[in-house]
Image 1: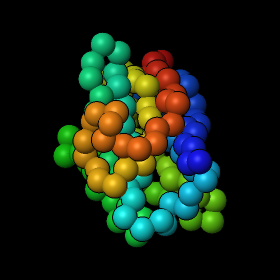
Image 2: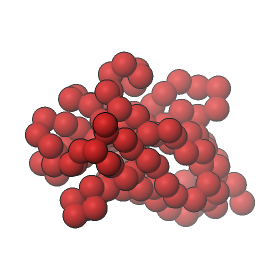
Image 3: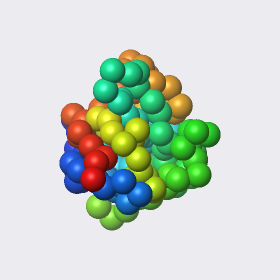
Image 4: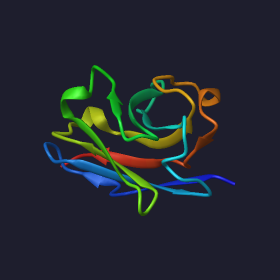
Length: 124
């Protein structure tokens, strides 16, 4: 059974970098044809896709966040990491990692496995 678990700080100061880790168990992040995504849901708003890293290590990002987002992976640990730079209070959200055979979508059913989510608040 595949499981994903997000970890990281719950509070980040404005202008700093938000870094989150997604630990994968029950599968390898190099399993063919899977994409490992980060998404978020701000309070009172819909789900937003942030970006992903593929089984082969290629990345893709939302155009609206591309300039300040970076996703990396550690294949030895089956983990992938989100870095969001220069955060503002508008980046406050519940952040999720998810596995899917495609990417860019924002509906729950578009991914076959989700992490439980982690609340991140940007505030001084």
